[in-house]
Length: 486
Ligand SMILES: Cc1cc2nc3c(=O)[nH]c(=O)nc-3n(C[C@H](O)[C@H](O)[C@H](O)COP(=O)(O)OP(=O)(O)OC[C@H]3O[C@@H](n4cnc5c(N)ncnc54)[C@H](O)[C@@H]3O)c2cc1C
Image 1 (cartoon, rainbow, N blue to C red):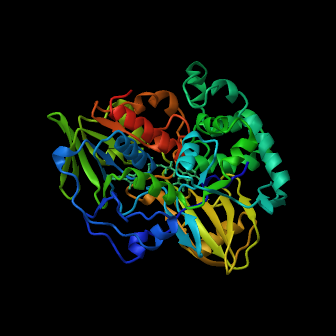
Image 2: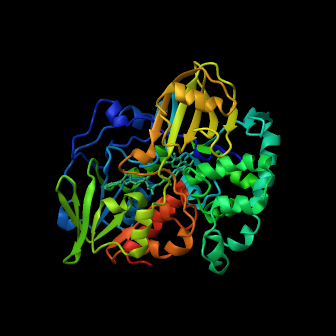
Image 3: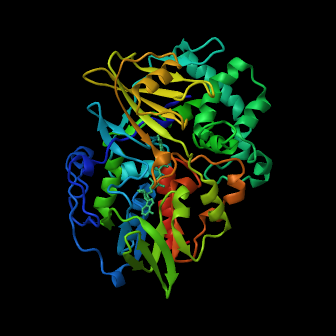
């Protein structure tokens, strides 16, 4: 398994770093606007938010709350149907849990990164905007945990060892996820399985300690901490979507957008030209008198015929909904779907150890996964992932120590860490369902609150939940629902 699943993230907000902090109620009327430049590089270098008057309240058809991939997709689809759309975004940038920036002189992603041409929504969007992919260079070595400490493997040997174990781990998934884009198609087979954690499955397999160590670091980090936290059916659905092979799964973690994720968002916004209001965190959403009224924390109310709520599920409980959220949505919001402690750490190292990958056994290091990125003028960039709340990922000494536990000694020049769990407009990182959530929350969690209030999020996709593809899928679906087409 290519463990690069969670590498990549973009540093600092371009608007802030450029010193051109947008005003509190900056409005981007993307019609011909320069707010998001055509290329990622220019968007990063010179964001220019054109302050224009937003659409008249009475003329607005839809409000989309949140300018991540799900929200921007929903807005584009509604604009394509001739609707007047305003996006209200809490932050001063688009992208949400994706964020393209620079670090060590390279374009990096602070959040979601890898895409794969067979992911249907990604594939369609790449073609639509003629966006190129860049492939990660192959690994030189892998450091994997053994009972005697970290050991260097060739990528072929390490990949084959983990692949064989994952084949065993996901045995049966061709049956229980016969149609992986319709996860409940074989609901009859899922009732017991969905209650199993990844830890339950590891225990069931009775692997030798040496074998278990090769994969339990991954089952733990995807789950957000311990293998007990994540559902077997979540990882098994990803495996099934990737074609039930280790190669397919590895391929989902190999390609990045050359322009950065912001390149795709920019293309979507430039094509559809919604009005985007930044720095506008929403406090309440209320339906009355045949309209929906959305009030920001600053007290400004916007109204429209319909609303798409495209904020992370972990954030739903911070917004007051009238009428209140139904049972499945309330449960999803209180349990959370995205993992709560999720830190992505960019590491710039002087000596570099080449293209080395490191992975710990469960509990073996506060940074259990470590992946090489590009060479720089001074050394090499690496990206690490942590779900350990005790790690101070901005502390070079702590990062160095955590990476050394994987068998890799680095001369660190600098680190840049992003704690997605601590971000108030994310409250978590990648989505990873907990045991029981698939069968207890779906399909109800996909329903509208009322015919005028619809939800979109990569956290509740039917296919690639927790991926960019899933966020786009959810935005497409929400636009159809909001427009009364489903
Ligand atoms: C570290 C990390 C690594 C990942 N790696 C990958 C990967 O390699 N490949 C992949 O495909 N996916 C990856 N993902 C997952 C992917 O990034 C997400 O699934 C996707 O970005 C979710 O998009 P979204 O639009 O649903 O949510 P978000 O991107 O979170 O967008 C929600 C938007 O709502 C806004 N918002 C929140 N609250 C409010 C409010 N009250 N008012 C107004 N606006 C609000 C937010 O600011 C944000 O812009 C990763 C995620 C993380 C965190």
